[in-house]
Length: 580
Image 1 (cartoon, one colour):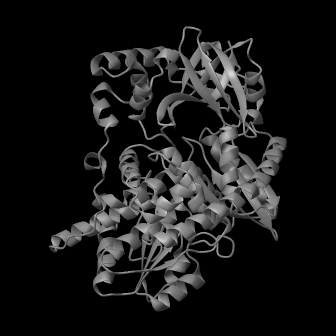
Image 2 (cartoon, one colour; image 1 turned 45 degrees about the vertical axis):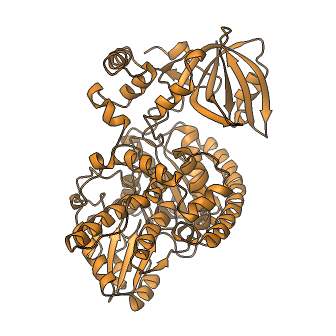
Image 3 (cartoon, one colour; image 1 turned 180 degrees about the vertical axis):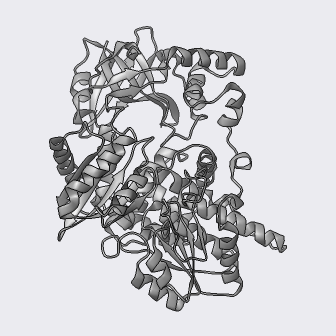
């Protein structure tokens, strides 16, 4: 297949790949039969949507897409045990992971309980001192003083800690990959249990918790009792879905779409306060959840107190929300500084090892365990390969891993752990955690690379930039951007549409901050579009485009609407460029 616009090597070293002739034909046919704009039809065809499915895809509804909670094993038992604890006024504990998904899952339960004038003890383990998931001392202590412990976003592999919780009962609501046997819990609801079909494996933990609350409301309704408003909780589900990098497909699209509408109403004090410190001054999008709100909620679990994020999401007090949001914002700034130092060292080490294999990895003494996951994500993005980053201390390495589409990282990590090369390890398709002895680091990473290569990791290469088609500046209207947004939300598993503009002249190029570039471009026929290239001066784009007055360029990026001074204008978020 020929390179799109004949760009075999862009300014950033990538080959441009556009729609096939067959995809073009299908898009034109869809545009004719549905009367949708051709660029939108191209995006739908790329998503595998047939013309007769287009209307439903563009307006996803929970009524059509929300799965029956009964489709998940143990769901009825979990909801019944949860309700029994409430009716009997048992003491309930919520044991949650320290990330956004765990915090949002805990907040869902705490908010729902509040409607019954009930409460629960929130327990989130310290990332450094306790590590991920339930541990024996914590579960023993909770078990002595509580009748029910609900583990959210964790617990599926925690056999010994769950057993240690006796005499308390344990209910697990999780989504991480399960083992061959389950811990001795009253119920373990997890779409990624070995005995599940996997059809709902793309759900994050907060979605599993939400489905349990749907089932709880159903059981209450059978008794003539009205349960809390579940739709009002979807802002938490949307935040967790995007921040946990769950694929935005199927019901996840509907959950996020509806959750964004709920969030725009600004009714949850924690998210209002966090949006304000993040300076979000427009209706929230998936981008805001993933890049502005999610990292701030995570900051507490990474380098501060582990429970800050969950407390922020669960509080109904404005003053507490504002104080927590300010603290998380400060911690996030500290996290960025730590991350930058580790990222530079990790990238240099990975480059020296080679970036063309099925796995890129780096390990360093004293690297903060709270940022290794973010740095792994950065390496993954830079190389289009699964990445592992490990912090070493006292001969033990604790690391995080991030994957690319089509590669089940969690299963591979779990297998390396089962083979004895890791002390422990597990996760889900897109992310995993692991603990390894320093002397086994090299053979463990070699074995992981071997398993990932069998799944095709590294075959795509970092040089392919996929495009949805070609546009002229005059066609890039705010109406078109709004039409394209109907195919969203965009994120993991559903990349935002990316279009090319051919043979453009650049004007008004200027540096913004340390590394960003802003400019305008046009085809000489009158229409002009503003563009911004984030991090352009970290690579070749900044210097070449800012000095490109005499040349013409092919430009590739994502269209968005920039609101400023009460006016809406189309803007291109530049991803790449090539000399025309």
